[in-house]
Length: 244
Image 1 (cartoon, rainbow, N blue to C red):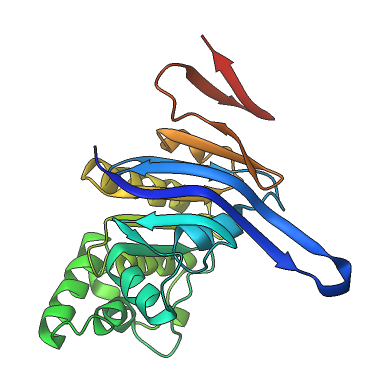
Image 2 (spheres, helix red, strand yellow):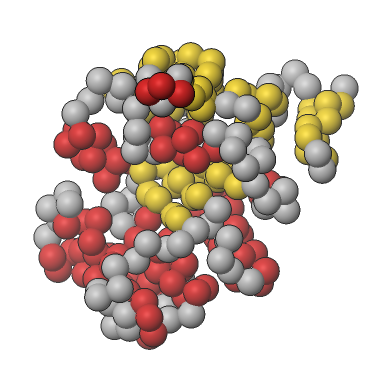
């Protein structure tokens, strides 16, 4: 497998003025191989959201280097980061983040506009993605006319618009019932089997069973990483348990 993402001694520190400095991430060293299904988990306030922003090139580290598909994103301009994100990463958010005034089809087409895809091609691909997710007959409905599960499926279709190599899912089942949540995770698992790299950010221990590698964050540091091939580890409630 090829390395697709690497975080090398990444720190994220915020200057709180008179209150001093807030260290959110420290000494993060993670290498992600193409085709992995990784769950990044940890309690509230552990640094998961900040980790997601840096992994997704939505933010840059205070110190350290982030290499995405052979490019160092640490010194990129915002326009360069936006271009790299649009071509390399598909985002799925807990709150869907669909544009309420656009139809499902238009929402899925939107990322393709940023890479100047021809309108006809974008429309055909968007419709194909909605069909694949069982929403072919809802393509002209706006988000307010769709259920939460349908909106999340539109968001998944949108994340696949530009055929990214990495899918970054931030608590993708947080606003869904258990049946729809299972559909979403099983679909991500299917994408992973087809070669997509999946990075799941979650605090829900029920979801990590879908991942093949678990990274546990605590107090801004990697506490456990099951990426080691030398030790088999299983996740149990309350932490990671090593097994020889």
